[in-house]
Image (cartoon, rainbow, N blue to C red; front, side, top):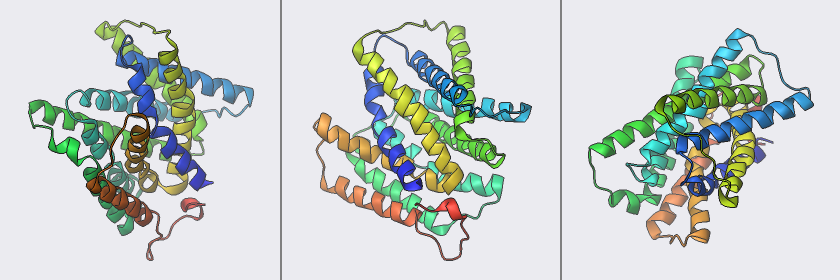
Length: 300
């Protein structure tokens, strides 16, 4: 079950970049994010109400959902999309892939979980491999003050993503399932971003072209409803640090799709980087001898 969720998350989030690219144009980026998570929240609430699976939450649960919405469905996306204006997408992917290490550290700080050596080694190896994959793009980029700002925003987005992982883990420890917390978190995130758009005077325009609508629907259903539910379920089952290795594999899927759709040419360094990423994946999921993992913490 965990393996299926893991592969599903990697495949879905590895292809959402196409939909994000197709959304650029008429509708402002923050407004597209509002549409995405507002509709995703609506779909989740309808499904949960029809199936009578919407769990009741107390005030603490709602407050955590507000924080989760701010981290995962609002600030996280704004940071990465803004950073992409100043630094190469490859560099954004490399920074985002450090989520594996941040999650391991945060799980240690907030939950007292032991940091497995193989997770750190695998995460570092995957990060190095990802750097090799994007080396031509990184080497051709000249440093500037905007580069530092972009790096800072990408790191902020990664930290927000990691914080959202910790909050979801906290909710699941309290017995709340990701379907319910995602529905509320996406609704809160969309609401907060809507207020920000109104404050900034960003118009809520709509592009009714088949290209934009199709991209939006892909981001709403597979990208958000299925993708975030699958990923955050993994966070609860496998632990935040292992689940976050998905962030290293997303760009690998994206590059393979790009090779098919846009003529991306694989190079020797890129192939070596791919080997390192996959070997890092093996290390991350290898059970360390001294670690005691929960029964559901392994791929199955």
